[in-house]
Image 1 (cartoon, rainbow, N blue to C red):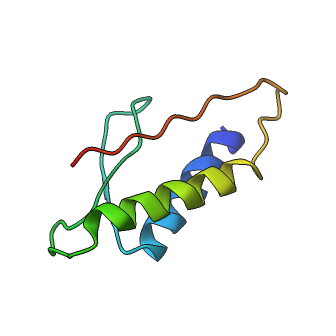
Image 2: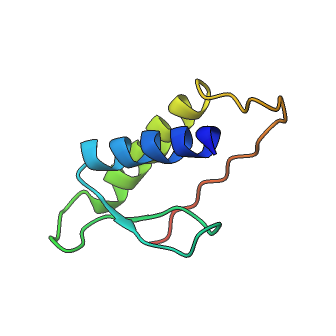
Length: 78
């Protein structure tokens, strides 16, 4: 639980820093973020891309205590 809490806390901080909006999903589901909602922004796609890059960098710093390799997948949809 500590590992997952670290992952989600780091992700939440990055989302806030980028001024984006996290979408609540069922537990154990994906982590979803939107840009330009509820306030429209011209750079919505670029803001998501910057977030994804920062999330990948942060993920390199977080290690699963079990030693298992964890896959990270990021997707953008316009």
